[in-house]
Length: 318
Image 1 (cartoon, rainbow, N blue to C red):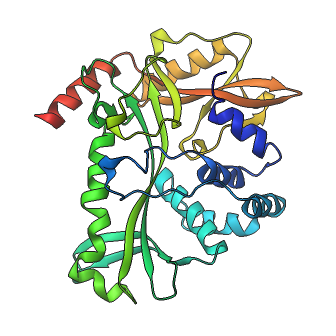
Image 2 (tube, rainbow, N blue to C red; image 1 turned 180 degrees about the vertical axis):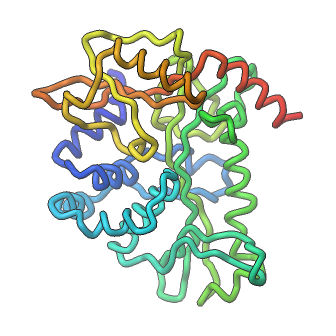
């Protein structure tokens, strides 16, 4: 029997949640890690939140009934960046758990030089210990023409970075921040450990793609598809929606009237690509009693995206 998708597991456990920010928080906490934290290649620099406990699940249910405190955090200095949104959600959770010491702490060496930023300073296992957490929530597409599977063959939808470049920066630069002399005045006690929490999705042109264990990617990571607009094949019996960036953390749940038909979706994407070449995230939904639930998702890209991805990788590896 095939393993249920993340969407199926999410809808089973969190079907009762209605507030979009609470649903996003549940998605962030409950989604599988993108990378295998036990893989030797990560040198024990990754961490996992582990399964969502019953007390946390109960708290999320209560929060859904009155999400005003979470809304206040999200709406404070709002940002369209998914990374900042995810950091606010995780910070809210850590504060609830009584572990948050500080977040988004900029380290400066003088008034005009920023050395880096601590995503989170978290209470360790003892009062005298502090943990440094870095959070990354990333979405990458596998460029299928690459013969050798490497992390750099997973590229961002807008071709601005790759999974390899991002992980290298986190492990070799961001997690080293507490060792910098300029960071010491910002730390009441030395950092006992520095680890990265990596969440997100990987998208494949070929659904059957398998990855070598040496890549260190979690076997149960969230998977989707990607295709060019001319390759897009849609089931007319399903419904569709284009997901805005801040809606990527949790599987979509929306009223049927807020979705569109397959024909309407193709027209909408074509219009968007005429204005901007940025890929779009599409959620494929089944409708039950007037409610559309995401069953699959993927990026639809302009037809020249493949060639641009190859050129980007060649520049990065030159």
